[in-house]
Image (cartoon, rainbow, N blue to C red; front, side, top):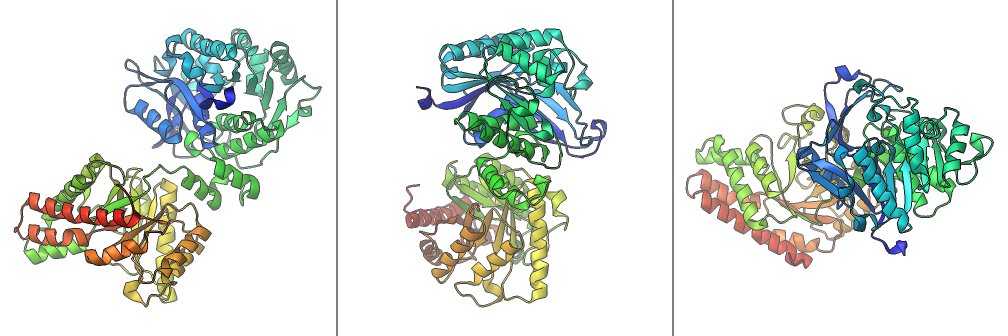
Length: 637
């Protein structure tokens, strides 16, 4: 009966926004900047299991404010069912501040005084939702308050009465049980007979019990790990999993043996420890992926150990948890380095499989031009101050065509496009932003060659766009300079978590044949540059698209795709270009500019047409290109 249920597992308990100190090796007092992520043990596990292919739900509370919405939106992006998440209009979302002081010290402070998730109660537990899953996971810390204790016990009672599996992550945080001060968030074990008795009252109803040696000690009431396991076994018939940090884990499905190591041991993975926070939640995610799919315990343990290894090798919790594709690659190929976050192949798979979802096509009005609009303004005798307002008119034109529907985008620059970017955000547009000095060859970046510090200021949804006039037959010295710039940009983009679109124009600097662009792309891939997007010029020979597709299939099947550029071609020529790629699976849209705006900009800057006319003309041209694209693709949009 349970095999046909909508969800595999529902997790229950804490939900917070974690703020991780970005300066590694510093005291929390000295941290200067923080990275934001979703946190809280059951929330981390919900995301971790979803990334591994399980259908997951969550029961918790979040505040009715920006941090609560951040959690809800991220859960939705991760595919976690949020029907069980209550929005609390009276309380704020929990916060946690964390830092990595060294490889053994990880200070953290919980901001949980009367916060939303701490107010979870029995009324928040919907029987229908609980029964929509094959299993329920509860967490030890959420038994520390009377109201959250009652809520979890109610959910367990419902689950057990209908034959569902119940899992407990012992998840012992002494200061959340009132046993330590605010500064002791890092503390993992303080003996407490009261806590032991409380946890033991739960264990009989649990089918799977997972904890560290400290957590097993509090559950068993003794610091002798073997004796603690035996005491737990005397209470519960559930499978017990002992997490042992770098030594992996041991599974005890039946009687506790004479030695800890005589249980079922999964394969371990020796790696560099970077940050242990959240590793247990990643471990649980991996174990559940196997256990709920009825894999052998050794497989469950191996997957759990691998997931834990990834977590301790990275800074953040759930945002950096492994995906199923990534895990399978690692189990098959291993890693070139013990510091998994430094393995370029694995890191690329991680980024590509955790990207935000986008529509199947992106149809963009490119208005990132600087020099061309400056020339038009100078020719018209108009102030260059008028360029920025004109770009805002372009956003109005896009809005008239898109009507707020997904699948539309724009390219906008930092020089004249700042206000237009605010308009683009309101329209929900995909945004690409150029970094290059217009026309530079060899490639140079605008404003600063230190692009990493500049990218930190960009919204995470904005895509970096970089145009390189790159021909595979260029002189070696020129190619070296161009490639070095692109490689540095790629490194910066991956470091700060921004997508990268590389635009290649070769036709202006050498002869073209069916292999020219494919060769250029192959050379850049050979340097380890794997952009999320390519922006390419239309190809005269249809066979060129076949060669380009072969390169992407061979070098990076996870590439988002290609958008076509326009090069100020007339509409009739663009129509031919669109038709030529109508069956090309990698081509996902276009980013055309001057074909749309050149005429209206010239007239508007010269004072020959007003704002409304400029918007209408650009909207008509953009709408025409959208129709031509959709007709070529057989789309009904």
